[in-house]
Length: 170
Image (cartoon, rainbow, N blue to C red):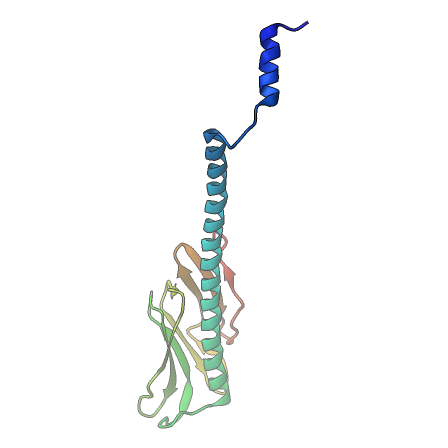
């Protein structure tokens, strides 16, 4: 046997129509949505920075391979006396890559390229690929940075340009 008041409350709750959401339900839903969207945006920014850094590293490796190929093939530019090799330089923190034929004759104007994505090396790059005999002077590890991320690859004494990878802490 039910108390009359409980019976009335039960009938009221059964017959009550819900026309919308409460303020608390809306606030919880919006908060969860904001957390999901915020995490997605942060992941996209991280992904985008890594892609720009990897793209600039591949671009620089392409310029280095171009210099290496020109030196090995003995591509002598007009006005160059005797070709010693091809030099690739980038100033510390700069994004302008200079490719220069190293000649015994008058100075040859360098070919310049700009690395994309606001990427720059953290040290000066100065690598010279020697002519027909091969090899490199200025072999080094090249580390490109963008924000707090970095990508490193090596140019060895024998002229090998390694694939490279992101530094471990990133």
